[in-house]
Each structure stands twice: as C-alpha cells, then as structure tokens.
Image (cartoon, rainbow, N blue to C red; front, side, top):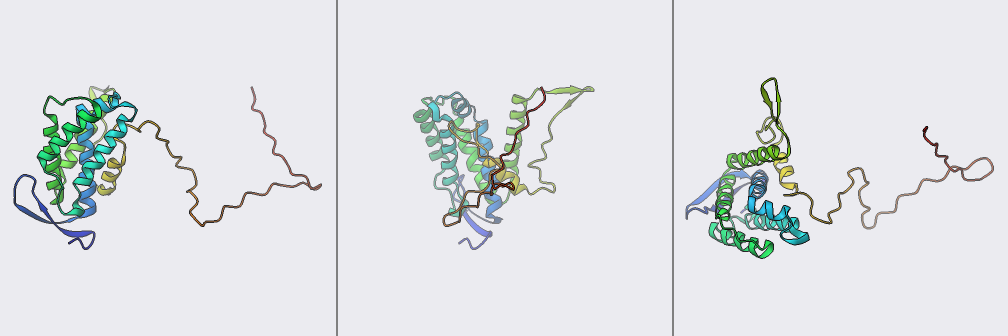
Length: 232
C-alpha cells in the first residue's frame, strides 16, 4: 500500500513471475519513466514518420500524444503493476498504427518498442534510471544531428552538452518532468500557445479586477493619450 512519497512498491516483473520490492520515490520513478517513454516514441521511426507526415489526418500529432498518454496510464507505479504485459503492448502498438495511421509495421519495431518500455518500467521501479536516461540522451543526440549542422572549429567538433539528464546539481526529477511534458512531434493542429506573460484566469467567485480610471484635466474632460509617430 502506498503511504507517502517514498513507498514500498510491489511489482510483477514483465519478464518473469518474480516479485520485485524496492524502496523508491514514486515521483522520481514516474518522472524518469515518462521521460524515457517519451524518448522511445520520439525515436520510433514508424510513429515519427506517420505523425509528422500527417498519415493519420489533421489529428496525426494528437493521435501520437494519445498513444503516449495511454501507455503511461497502463504503466503506472501508483497502481502497483502494469495493466498489460510486453506481448499485449506489442499487439496494441501494431493495431494502433494500422487503425490510426493506416500503416502496417513490417520491421517488427513495435516488438522492440514494447520490450524497451517494459524493461524500463521494471528498472525505474527499482530505482535504476540508467536505461531511461541513456534513451533520452540518445534521442536528444539524434534530434541535434537532425536539426542542427555540426560546426567544425579548430579541428574539433562543437557539440551540445548532454548534462541535462546526467544529474549534477540540478533536480533531475524536474528535468525529466519537463522533458516528458513536451509534445512528441510538435504542437498538434489547432493548439493555441498560451502567453507566459498573460495574467492567470479569474477563478469562480473572484471579483473582476478594477479597470484603471482615466485621467481628467482641470476642466473635467478625460485626457486622451497622444501616440507619437516615429521618425522616418
């Protein structure tokens, strides 16, 4: 039974009947696992191509987001163990790609994806985040090579640092949560980017903020601000 942030987790191994008990942080394990799953799906060529190319219609990217959400719902540490095993996940991935993107995965890559997710779920549940972090690092490297030209300077390659998931002084849990919180392949169609400088929405029952009163001159007339034209 989960009694707090740090709790004892009883999980059935997806690779066998052995029971695994580990004293780990639910929050940290969840963040690392979700970041790892995000990296796996971003690196899955079949899904990335289908979503980015719009093979699933205008909601192609949204369908990829739904797939990730469904996987994370099935592999939830708070539930004690995964609600599906490796083989159920394999079949689910293949069926989803065929029904939502009209493609048949012929390279058996869905089996590799399912196995990696299940192994990662077991390892993160035991407090071992190496596989998840390595997967994220590889996904970041692949993305950097794809989107950025490699710059050669003084005979050496200038590359971005991969210290984000290495630990250090930064809170790795927050880093993992931020990584897992990003869209898989960019914002879905119709998504409206919120303004970070916009005031928070007014809560129910909260009074409407007072509007600033206009300035009044000595004769009682409201003063209209004059906009100065820039020099041409």
